[in-house]
Image (tube, rainbow, N blue to C red; front, side):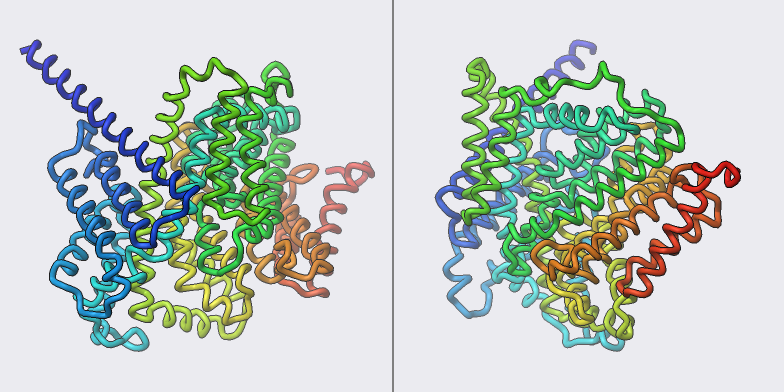
Length: 637
């Protein structure tokens, strides 16, 4: 009996190894295809996108089992059936591209059957990769389209036949092959490849050492290391949870060793990792969709996002500083801080920093994003080999690892893009976006602040149930028109939606970044989430500053307004961060907290008299209760 069990386990292990090789080969083929189209140009839209989706579906059902409780022992017959039918539908769409684009005719029976099959396969793929929320939204979208005449009030509309909706999903740009999928199949794919290759050649370790060197010596150094390394990871990573898992495994144990409370350590890493999604150039991959939707050049959006990102990380650093002062925590021990020579040795820095600089240079010079990414990859791999010829032996393993990592990320991104595209298409078909937008405008009653708060709540709820890319895409279709209708400008409105959708990473009840960091720190997740919101206060208030005053976005507002807006935002962040921690130069009394908190809030809405009064009150309270007692003994408590 024992021999039989051993034989069964051996066969299972062999099966897993075989399928891992198959997955690796598919991943490599997909990445090579993306590199090829990056340098030679993409195929015609539906062909490029059908290949992209076909690869994603084939890998999805090999990588993700039907249940999270089921251990991967190779795909089941159902997994293979779903993958094969999805691939057949994608091949059919690619072959029929010319007919889809040129013939204005009723869909054939085969069209409708494959449309239904592919929709079901894509929704199941989404359930496995990103959860049930977004597929439920899509199903509700179909039901809303069909049951329109039976709905009350403004939501009533003429019924749309099932056949028509599935035809639009499969044969037009209002569905699977739309612009969101197109951006994923070209630009996002290229950037993910760059990030995967840079991490495979040692970007993670290099970023970590640079962060320790930069921030380790300061008060609260261990927590500041998490801030710096997460912002560096944000240059290449588009996921708060992935960022938290990667950097948190190093920063959280270090913080706990140096005396940080588990909840605070988890909160710092969660807030820092969530901020990685607002750091150019990747910005959670949503920046590429923003460029497509708004028509604003990608590089302009990146430049405009610099000051808000700095303000967010400044607010996070201030919270850490105040907490470190309050609890008496010091920096990282000197023996744990590497030298600059270790951090920036040419064998480490050249393959990492040169491709990033080259990528930015090529983009600024006006080259296409995929083309720029291709040459960044070439430079990275070339310098990796040239700086140390001994690496040649492990070079195939590095590529294999990078392609597997990139393909896993691409699988999720592709599924998200496709399902988001379907839902946005249903919103367009039914006119739901216009109706919801009108509802927000009416509820605001002409008051911008109310409209902005309502929009932020909608985006926060969307962000809780779906990934950033999907949440932003849906918000751009539903909420953006209402913001513009009440006076917001185009880019500030879209960045506002993006920022507020990202709040869900640290905001209960569904806070993905905290769910990752809390187990690492062995912390209570709800307490960690609360502290994370305090530390990440910048992400709550900065969007209101730039939507009211676009000067905060470089190139999108009067430059002469920038000093005033920057001053208001800095004071607001200082006030709110100190109140959140309850410490400035020393512990704050409740009356100090109330007055300084109200001063911070009144700085958000522009108005010379209101802002001047708020700034005066906040500064006066801090100087009176925090500053003077340090100078005049009679004021000491």
